[in-house]
Image (cartoon, rainbow, N blue to C red; front, side, top):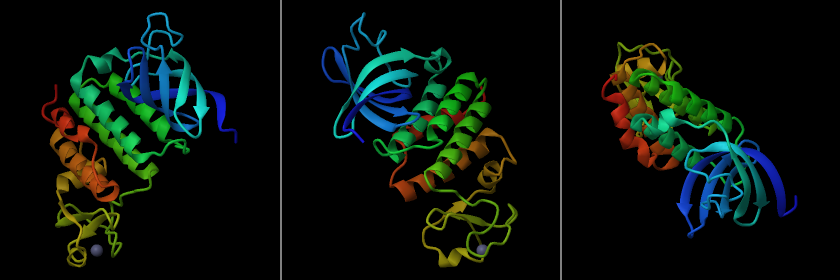
Length: 248
Ligand SMILES: [Zn+2]
């Protein structure tokens, strides 16, 4: 592989910071080349080559001078579909930022991301179209569950990860991230790392309930799993609480 080459790829902007009067440093997720840190020069000039600039969460087609040993360079960017519905709704904005932060945490520079690009892109489309908080919470949690699987953590929900017995919400349930999912009351004594699993969270994770309170509890369980496996949760996690507060 050459150290530098020009590539064309579809990207989503994960982070953006100003570097100078006219330049930005971005971290983007690309469909075929994974995560790329790059410099966008002249991007803030009105008639810059990058068609009016690039903002956080923007998606589109990019031409990139890929540098495998340093910062890459954005040569051209053609924005795709704009998402005014997300920028004008703070809860949608938080939901997307949470997923973007998680993807940034869980991916490595220039490593293949497989389905992660498609899941993130589809979640952004669905979040833009969500017409109430219940739907928004459902999209957020489904995308989070899917991303957890893609980064290597598939929480087992239906049966105890220790004894393999099918469990029900009528009994006390526990959740252990290091064990990989639900633990029944008979097996929990042997597990140090665990949390009590609220039956409403359990039902929500199995798609049996869809109310906001259960969604909030399910979100807590998945974030617990993230904290135990990745070492931390996205900082946007606390901002997402507003999604679960009322169904407007
Ligand atoms: Zn068990």
